[in-house]
Amino acid sequence: MKTILVEVKHDEHFMYFLTFNIYFMKANFSSLQNNLPKTLLFVFAVLGMALWGGCKKDNVDPDPGPSSSITQQLTSDSEGGVISLGDFDLVVSPNSIPTLADGSTATVTFSVEKNGAMPKTLPGEIDKKGDLVHFGPEGFIFQEPLFVMLPLPPGETAESVSIITYDNETESYKVYPTTYFDPETNIIGTGVYNLGYFFLGNIEDVTEDLNSNKGQGGFHLYQLGQTWYPIDGVTWHLSSHLGPWYAVDNYHKLFLTNFEFAYDEQRSWYVDMHRWVVQTPPNVTGWKPNHNIGIKFIGPQGTYTWGLRISHKYFQLDLPECQDYSIPWVITVDKPVTCTFSGCTNYSTITNLPSNGTWTPVSCFSGYNRPEATVPVCTGDFQATLTWYNGTGGDTDLDLHLYGPDNMHVYYSSKIGPNGILLDRDIISTPGYVQENICAPNMNDMPRGEYRIEVDHYSGIEKDFQVRVVRGNYSNSYSSTLSSDGAFIVETFTLE
Image 1 (cartoon, one colour):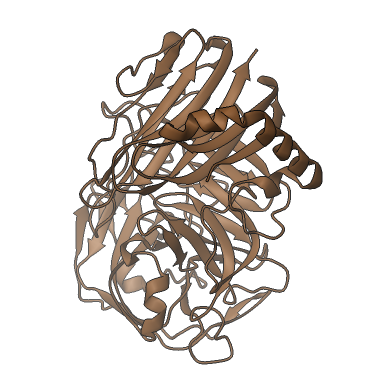
Image 2 (cartoon, rainbow, N blue to C red):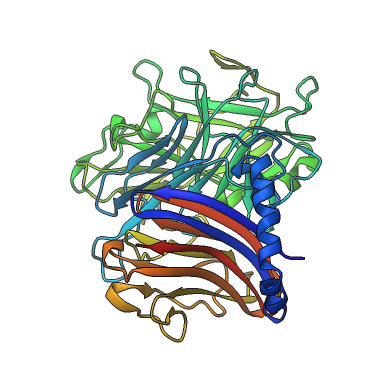
C-alpha cells in the first residue's frame, strides 16, 4: 500500500512549497508515478476536509491540536539551558553535550515539536492524556542526563499518569518513572540520556489501580532546614584537592543496581532500569542543583538497591568531579503516594544511608552501566538526522540520502557535497542507538533548487526508524518502517 501525505508549509527561509512523504517499494514506484495526478486530487480533497495535522501518518490521536516547533543550538562548553515550547521544557544539564573527538567544542541543535504524528498506533491499554511532544535530537546519547518536562493535563495529578515514550530498542511504548515534580507549576518530568517522543497517559496495571494498593509509590529527598540529604554525616565532609565540597553545590545521583517489583505484571511496561535517572535536577536558571525540588521519585512499588554518587564543581565552567559511596542504599517503596495540585504525601519511609562506607573518586561520565555518549560530528542550519536502534549485533543497514540541484547526491558513496554539505557517517553494523546526519553549515550557501531527503533499506531485517529535519527555526520529525529494498521519501523542499 502507498500513502502520500501533502504538507503546505512556509517559513522565513523557504517560499511556498509542497512536501510529499511517500512510502514506496522501489520496484513499484513507476506505477505510483503513473497514478500521481489522481492521487494528488484525492489528497487535496482530503485536505479540504481535515486539518493538516490530522493527515499525518497513522496518527491515532483523536485531537492532536495545532503543530508547532522550536529549535536552539547549545555547545559543549556552555552551562546548559532550557528550550521551551509552551509549557513543555527540555532542560539541558551542564556538561551533558560531549566534545568532539579531538576535544574541541561541539554544537548540538535541540528541538521541541508538539502534536506531530504518533510513531506507532497506541495499544489498547494506553489512554493518552495531553499532547504528544518530540524532543530532539533523537538517537543521540548524552553524557549527562537531560530533563524532559510536561504539563499535567486538567484533572490529572502526578501519580495518576505515567510518562510514556516510544522505545526504539523494543519498538514499543514504555514508561519512565517520574523523577521531577513541581507542584507550583504543575509540571512533571524525568531524566533521560536520549530523547524522542513523550506524552502522558494512563496505563492498565501501572496507573489505573489508584484505588488499590498497586498504585505508583515513591520517595522524596530534599533540603530541610540546614540538613543536606541523604544525611549530614555521610555527605557533608566531602572534599578534593581543591578544597571542601560545599553541600549547596553537590548533585546527589542514585544509580539503580537492582530492583524487585512488588507487582510483577508492571515489569514489562518500564524502560530498562539502567536508563532511569534519579538525581537532584539542575536549576533552570543556572548550573547549580535545585535542592528545593531535590530527589523525587514516583514509580512502581518494590525494593530498590541504589548506588550513590556525589557530583560537584567549584566554578560554572569547571568540569565536574565525582565520588561514589561504597555501600549500596536499599529503599523499599511499599505504598501508593497520594498527590494533589499542591504536592504529594504518603511517600514511603526511607532508611538512613549506612554511615560506615567510604568515598572513591570516579569518572563522572562512566560506571553503573551508563550508556556510552555519542560523539557529535555534523551540525549546521540544515540538518537531516536518521536514527534507529540497530540491535545488539548491528542487524540493519539503513542509509540517508540527499538529492539536490545539478544531479547532487550526498550519500555513503559520495559523502561531501557542494558548499559544505556533508554526510557525517555511514552506519553498517554498529550496534545500539545509531544515527546518520547530513548537514550544511549555512543554508544561504546551499545551491538553489529542489531537494529530496530519502531513507533506503540497504540490508538486514525490517526496522523502525526516525528522521528529524531541521531548517533554521523549522523542525519536523517523521517515523516509518522499512524492509528489504524499501525506500521512504522523507521530505522535498525548494530553495529559491
